[in-house]
Length: 253
Image (cartoon, rainbow, N blue to C red; front, side, top):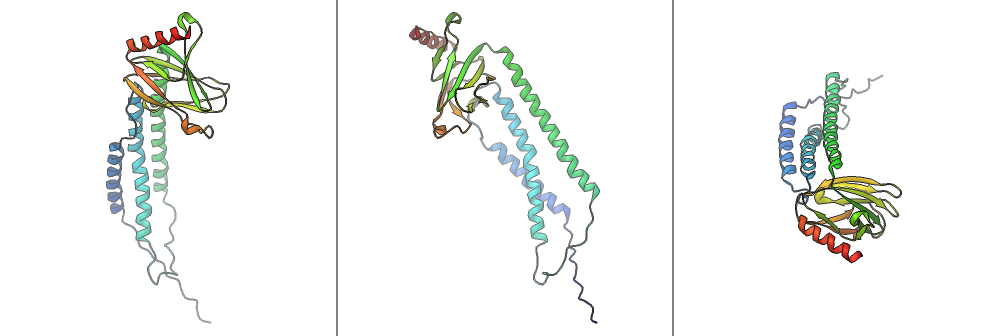
């Protein structure tokens, strides 16, 4: 009886150095591009700088992971592609590499712990600043608008407006509520946002730092009119804000 033909084994090992060089070069270019892109609108709060820095740190940490992974995949697709006449060849019988498995488990774990710890520190500092708030504004969301409520003169009935007015250089605490469905109160220039949940108060604070007009956006899909749920946050010099507040209170009497 004739012996069955032996199927050959293709053994072409990939050099590591070219992949490292290509991946490192692409990572540097990717990080540079990520840091050069102007991702956010102008910063108008004291918290924005720390949040923007956190974003940059995440780019620096995540781009190499993505680029190096894609480099290995694409290089392997090119290096180990099937050539004519190799349709019946098998890859080399390779057992596991314990050292490599430890490295690719330990490095991501250390990276994640570091990023989570840094994010927690930023969040803790932002929430700690809320204790020093000198102004309170109640924000109410409903399909499809926001209303803003200011304490009345001498603790009386609240003043309600459909535009947000704030004094500059002031720590403001927002108490966010909803009348119907879940919304999300977001002023991109402040860099912070939080859900407005029916039956529950949510809060956050910002320290206004820049005079100007900034978009107020609902960042949670809340119905057919979601895209129209936008207003304006007007950050004014303190004397102009006080004049506006006095005028609105006089109108409300």
